[in-house]
Length: 297
Image 1 (tube, rainbow, N blue to C red):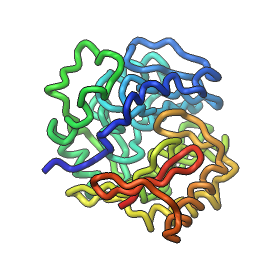
Image 2: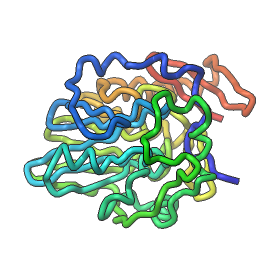
Image 3: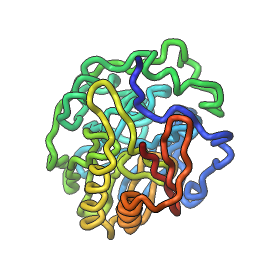
Image 4: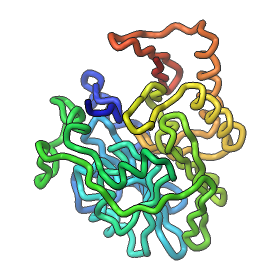
């Protein structure tokens, strides 16, 4: 059976929440691919957003004095390389925050992609993902704007790519700007965050974003999310980065760092077993908090 690599059951009329309020406060940037919307964030960061699909994934381009860093490559439905080439002419480094399909879709367009050194993640870099593994994300209602003209849904798959494994603590030196990658297991064991200490920014990947956090995902290659591990990760990052600005990979780009502590507290509260929740037909429990939810087994 195909693995479940991301939640593929979109809420009813998810697009009615669009445009999300934060984008009205940001500067929109012209670029050549209508599948994407690009916004300029503080500190020479561009948010490359895919608002037409219910995943609402956001990749990021970070500019340093000598190089640029692309954090994730999106769903692979639009051409993110064409967008990046317009935004910068600096030598480019590419890294994935984890190996779920919606963050690695355009990896194959780049010379090399850095990924956390986990065997399941490495396997995805080598083999890609089949159409059967991603087709659930093409169900009716998944997108509200037309797919790009050259995108063929029946052929959608994630291609293999050239990759470079990294360990926790790896530093990306962009010239006068250093981002440090560190492992943050929970959403998946290969998840990383990237800390830009000079600008007090924390790129959170899918370990945190302002929506539903999934602590139940499973797959054939060991890329599980585990609630106890997730709780420990959130406690650790909350202790260190609560005064940073969080740069998130879905829905809206920025949140205050104090949110990390709120998520850590939410996991601790779930552990007590006393919170109300909604349970679906798959016995998944959804706990709702202010600004985010947590889904567990």
